[in-house]
Amino acid sequence: MTYVVTENCIKCKYTDCVSVCPVDCFYEGENMLVIHPDECIDCGVCEPECPADAIKPDTESGHETWLKLNAELAEQWPVIDEQIDPPADADQWLGKQNKWTELSREPAARP
Ligand code: SF4
Ligand code: F3S
Image 1 (cartoon, protein in one colour):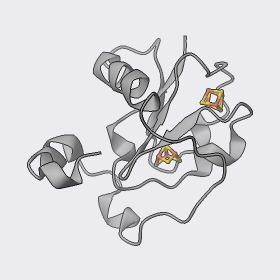
Image 2 (cartoon, rainbow, N blue to C red):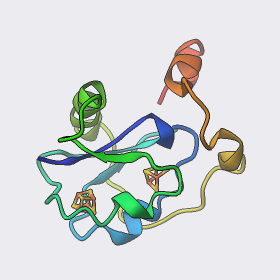
Image 3 (cartoon, rainbow, N blue to C red):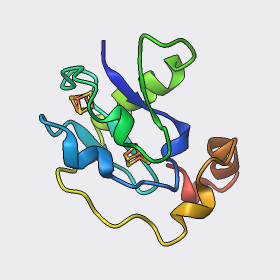
């Protein structure tokens, strides 16, 4: 199994998760992070650290699309191994629904 970053991370990107991951398996895109499923050791420590409740175990149903996306994007994006400041408007995106759909309407701003 692995843990997966899901839609709630989009535009929030608090990166508290990065500061606790023992194996540095988070990868950074412009609007969200993803977890490399082959590098995650399933320790679970990142899950409760995310203020946006964006990290889920892949054993929970409903995250199949996100698991696929995490696997694909982790191969393309650079690793992030230190916590960084969140975007200035991160709190305005906290808890918003359908962030992916909203961003997909603006191709330049996709995650
Ligand atoms: Fe890193 Fe553990 Fe979270 Fe996997 S579950 S991403 S190894 S902190
Ligand atoms: Fe995203 Fe939560 Fe980490 S918002 S960057 S998964 S702490």
